[in-house]
Image: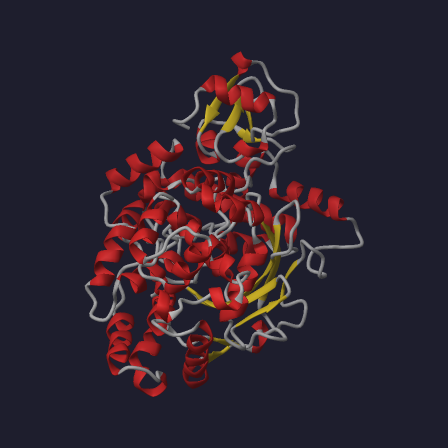
Amino acid sequence: MAEMNDDERYAAIRARDARFDGMFFTCVRSTAIFCRPSCPSRTPGRDRVEFAPSAAAAVERGYRACKRCGPLAPPGEDGGGPADQLALRALALIHGGALDPGPDRSASVSGLAAALHVSERTLHRSLVARTGTGAVAHARMARARRAHELLRSTSWPIADIATAAGFGSERQLHETVSRIYGRAPSTIREHAALRRGAADPPGTGGQAGGELGGDGTDGAALVRSELAVRRPFDGEGLADWFAARALPGVEHVDGLLWQRAVRLPHGPAVLEVDLAPRAGPLPLTVRLADLRDYAAAVATTRRMLDLDADPRGIDAGLRRAMPALAPLVEARPGVRIPGTPTLAEALLWAIVGQQISTTRARALLEGATDLAGTALPTALRTEHIHRLAISPAEAGARAEEWFRGPGARRRTLTTALTDPPDPSLPAAELRTQLLAIRGIGPWTADYALLRGARAVDVAPARDVALLAVARALDLAVDFAALDDVLGAASPWRSYAVMQLWHHRGSLPADQRTLRKDRS
């Protein structure tokens, strides 16, 4: 909010400018309601409003969510630039369930701070500066959002929704949801049923269906939900990237429908997202072995699809910093960073992929998964998904059995993956730790950070594919010049890299690689 003053914010809400949705929230004093900037309701007088930097901050001030514009699910509410990485890392953990009460009630803000390697005071100051409120308020908001979505999209018993949303009890769910949404859970469910109509009750396969084993999944939890996303959104680029690296039985892309089996804290899950162009949110289907993993499933999906990015801000920044990149940005707006479920998986791909093609790297990892993948429970399987990939730790421990390549690289796999760096560290510290591992150079470290830690400002060093594209576009003739060109794109170098990598596929075959006489 520091980049705008209140008069500028008021001008944005008068214009109902959707570009500012998620960047701030309008709180109407006379009605105790808060809205997103694009709310279609009549604009209140200037003297009747104040502004909050986050939905959680608005709720903490005593405001309830507007029923018309639904400000609790704006696209990319917690997204933003890299100015405060600590707050953004904390929010990612909170939305993944880090502060949800477990069976032992051990989750705490002090534990979250310890996981982030900072003091509780430092964590609080960072969150308040970035969002206007602290960790507990954000955790409460995250649980309420999950419960609201499950109330709208499933016919589950309230007790199961409380478990999946991260509440300690049904009573806690009722009190929190009623306070934030201004409606009792039963009313939310009734209104959702009326909107769907009797022809499509929850759990029957409609867009918002959800059930507990009612479709023959033999006890698995099935949720059909939606993912808010800022537009523009390059779903085609994500689908192409995942398809090129999909391991059979683990990941599958059919057109723009993406499926992936993942490990979550309490068991496996299968994620499915329709990445096709549309005006609204992305349809999400999740198959869970354990209800408690719902929050982690949504958080993992959002991270892998980079849904909290600010595409308009990023694209505008790239056009300003790298004018030569503008035609690519115009042709492919809203590029996202295709993530991995964990940093360790990204590191596995980075090490295996050193100096070989994507096709060869995928073949090696397919062999590793044939050796030591894990079959999914029958309840979770789909037509194309039936197993989990080999875990990074086991891939490292058994590298001798599956990796066909230099012995030094095999030893790097074992060293790096049996004891990988702590993924909750800041990107700069992670990079330092990765580079300290024998056999890991700048390219491997940067690739792992880009895909496994959503590092938005890295450019894999001496990447031959990047240089080939840069030469074809007359951006750079050698690696030193390429570093300078990409340096201008900071703090969004990762997105400049993705633009160039995607563009490589549209080049003539003889321009996609470096010719020896030009190296």
